[in-house]
Length: 137
Ligand SMILES: [Fe+2]
Ligand SMILES: [Fe+2]
Image (tube, rainbow, N blue to C red):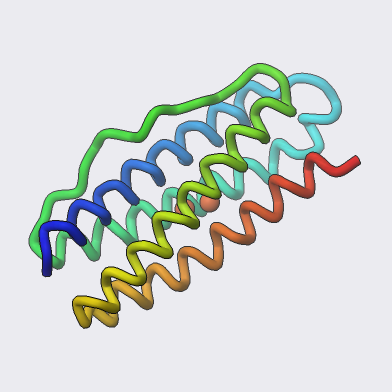
């Protein structure tokens, strides 16, 4: 396993930890009827991100490296629209990184890591779809 792939997995964990906290605090800080309606959905996504962080950390630990405890920079936002735009950005970053990880894992013959990220990446696309549909009026 290359140091490069291990570093990429830790970047993935940092992004998942960011998403957990970002979405959780958005869920907590809801205001107004519009946000009330989507607050539970955001909470569900936050829990999904925690499961992603755990799955990636388990893989990284198995591969012999220690998972980071540091999230990537967190953007909660004040207005619902700002929150959702921050979340769309986070999902797009995850999707792009996970495609790179799949490619790198493939190059290194690490089928299990590739499969783990195939599954997670598909869920990030669902999250991306969820957040973008919230902006449609
Ligand atoms: Fe995730
Ligand atoms: Fe996500």
